[in-house]
Image 1 (cartoon, helix red, strand yellow):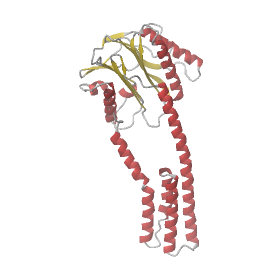
Image 2: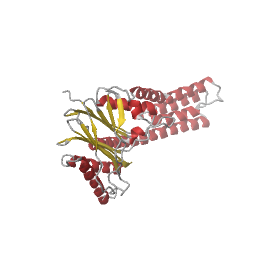
Image 3: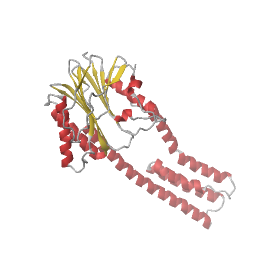
Image 4: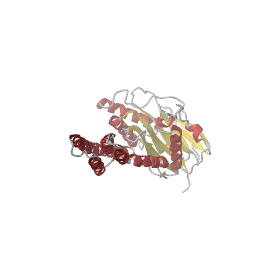
Length: 365
């Protein structure tokens, strides 16, 4: 599958390419203004602005060329009108030279900052991949796909999480959202996922698995200062799908997942609302809801970045209405369809990250 919004990406690249030509346009425009108008009119402002604009837009070589071009253009015009040897001409030429030198310095400063930012992005991406590895494409009769998409290109690492694991009790999945962002959220997400992976093979019931994860996050919040008590909670949905097509769900304060089959879509609403993980206040046994999950059905689990995506009028995205009647070949296509539709709905930046996990019951080999 191609990347999301490839046409929009190409348009942004074209705009960026044209913007990088702006210093050249200013330089040529300033020279023409100077050359084609009487001596009383001056294009000095163009020669000063062009290198400064080139600094954040161009490479070091490009900025140097624009700076040298500004100096050469100004010197040529001063010589054309006979001002090159006068005090005013020398002063003007020195000013343009100083501006060009400052532009080169700014270019270097911005380059260093960009390198640091690129390094930070690489580290963030590596951390994100370590926390959220790609799930297997298939597990028994189930096809699986997952996607994570940040709200903004340079956004902090979020606390959205997901995991899939084959267990003796069936295919078990979790999707969740840690309150907050940054490394504290990643730390909490790591605790939740670690507890899930360890207990998924051991706990015979989904309610017991949720309790293990709840205790693990609460203990970690007691031990570490970074995880704020009662505020570092995690909303989550746990799913267990048996090979015979029975779906079990435990919802701990998270947006309900969707079940899709033959063009019909509905929320798998919890029969009993429960508190999020890590609050230390849940004393009873979590309610486990059971639903049929026959061949051809798909389970779509998501974080609130989907349902809280808004358009220009402030209308929230409604996946039930938008996905009703939509046909897809598998979980990968389902997630791509959803992402494309969310982008179409918002028409621009969103306020939150999105984590998506889809499982399709497909017994075909």
